[in-house]
Image (cartoon, rainbow, N blue to C red; front, side):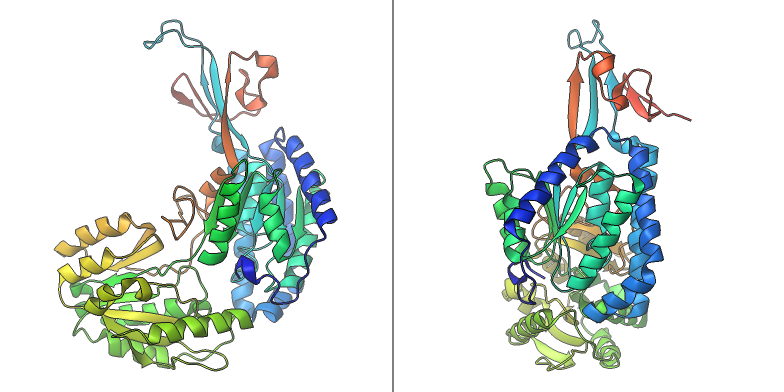
Length: 495
């Protein structure tokens, strides 16, 4: 749901007086959070995870009612959400995320006498989080942005998404209650709502960073507000992606059935409403993949979308795509009424290169475009037309000369390269990167999934020549929090 669609489902704005009080409380909480022990914050997150797991029988049916997503999918997504909280708790107890670094004074330092310098990461301050529509748990009220911001020691103002309003309020109540029960400070978390509220939030000078998952139009509007403030702030927006997939000649010849079945399953997962849905599939001409994909897509049933607004937006984008020169429909209906079923369109690389801006736009829903190529040169030329993407996929034996060049081209344009797999299903782990160059995101160096997401809400501070009794605990000489630290260039672990 984009930021300019917030009122389409009847959600009113949080009153301005109430918003001012909530932001003030968040700012007050943030001042105390700076000195909170990471191990204490870990306990808060673990208690929250336990609370949400216990509320599954209340939350999952409510989510199904508001989003039309299946119970099995939602149960799995809630488990993912609580796992994220637990994983960040583990990171907090480890302590290395603070990057505590100490350089003792050294009069013999080769570049001249060195003063005592001590560096660490500190919470950035109150954070505005804009919830997504397509993941009512994992990217919403208690989702990854909230979890990583709380883990960093930031207070959170959560802008609810209007596609699941009751779920947002109920989940928000559980979050607030759980944090209070665990001993977190007042004002650390609140849910707000409404279009004008979203604008006021990102413009409020007390907000120090913002994160967003949604459309290019809505995210870019908020990004522009964030950076045009008298004091600009970081804005971490995930704005959409078509996630192209490339099948090399060898894979097309020897793995056509596996590629076709995997592609249809991935592009139709969640009725095509994943930000990592593979929206374009490049296949060697004559490999028979078009027929295989069309047959499998035709077996998939229609399903409701997240909201009427998303359904109508999908229908409009699909109609525009189907009308482009050289594009033909090979499975499904290009003008669906009611709940849509998967739709496969097809074109050639030459037609795509002639109309690349239109044919590489995201179509959020169960539609995908297959593009046939006749040479490796065509395949590489097609790969070079893409702007920034969250992912790109390569299906190959690995022995073909084109794969190395293709990998190089895609690595310049995406945040995650998938080899002989599919991009849907973003594992929450240590090495995950869910981001990419613009317009996939507004911050190419950061991720919104995985433990590195905590870095978005931290900022470095160095203390020069400060006496031990005024230093933060993470930098005191006797290391009271028992953190792993780099001291005079040597990494020191604590058993």
